[in-house]
Length: 315
Image 1 (tube, rainbow, N blue to C red):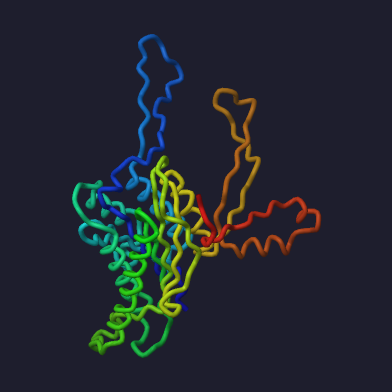
Image 2 (image 1 turned 90 degrees about the vertical axis):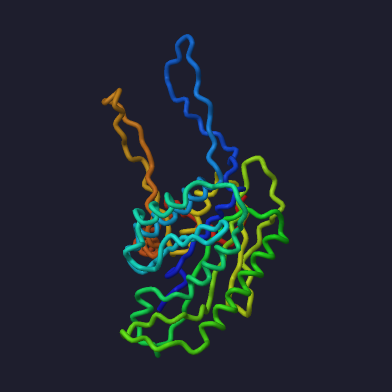
């Protein structure tokens, strides 16, 4: 009843390293005419933190636009402590609440910290029941699954392996805690700590544009007796938004239909028009219905888009 995409937790690395430049210049000098004495504006670069926030928020925008209910996303910002920005409550599943929380966290500051504390908090969050889960009778049985997307930057594969080991141990401890006797709820709602039957952990290792990473991509690997599936993806900061835009498709069984050749009137020349394309994200099941209704000629002319699984490697 509760698939893996019922619960998703983002862990955003807020350590000092994420305050460095992404090394991907953005040109702000858009002036068309440059007279004598014109001083061009220098290009600017986003920080790794800004790239991470923008990509994660865009992922949420797709999920919340298509699934107003039933698909919940939480955010944990990790530095010297785990800053939990929202809960599973429906009232906190919106951009206003999320962006307010990010504003309170602020930009990256100097100081120690790491992603471990945030990852542990994310696993604990998966053990908290959502509103739908809490409304079920305490004696009802269901599978509690979830997904964690940890955006961080590690030195090498050994550091990634250490992070994954901590995540596995935290998951085992969380399930041991859930198996212990817990107080009976008084109001009829089940707010007890839940065992986590499966956790899909995706570690996205972000690097600046000109920095070589010693972390390698790792395909989906089952650990802890099938309790956790782990994959590692290495990505440049400038490509992070595109990566998450692709990952959201298999995570929520979505597909893209491209509408081409849409005429666009040009303001300067109303007699002519340019064409543009629009990508529509929707349920993947809609493609099956479209293909079933196609004639042989239409099927030949169709452009089939192969969805790239999250297990694939991204450069």
